[in-house]
Length: 188
Image 1 (cartoon, helix red, strand yellow):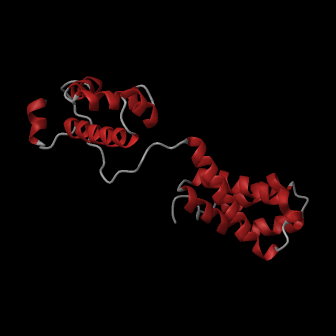
Image 2 (cartoon, rainbow, N blue to C red):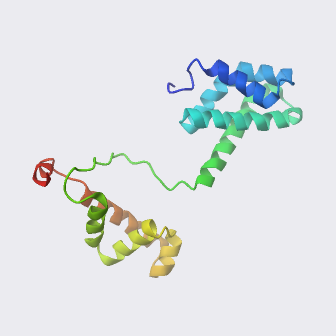
Image 3 (tube, one colour):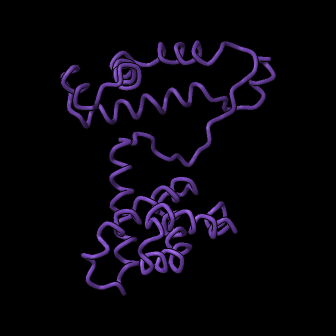
């Protein structure tokens, strides 16, 4: 795993979780957290990909588990209960963030020294886009309109909005990225 979840600080975390959640009163719950905390933290890390978020996720899931402790019939299935709780919480958090960023296989090129500053370069690149494409991109990213709002405004389908914005962003990326490193020599 690496970054944080398997480090030696888990004993301190377990102690903090037990004190915070159980208040030191429910020995069975305390034993469960001490015994299963590291494995559950690794599972939380797999869900979030971030050590801090994993700790938060596990903490919230353990609070919910503690509150439901008396209602849980099969204590042999506690790990399954906590993991399912973590998945549900993580989905809920993800939905609340309304994540609109998508991973890309390509890293962006570094900003160039010299030449126009990025905002000016973006504006120039936008000016080179066809009118409808430029309008769709501006409405989406400058006006923060949804795809359905853009479709209604421009009188086109949502699918057309998606493809138009996607093609426009691809053209902008291509326009703002140097394709040949020798171009850098000419700009500096």
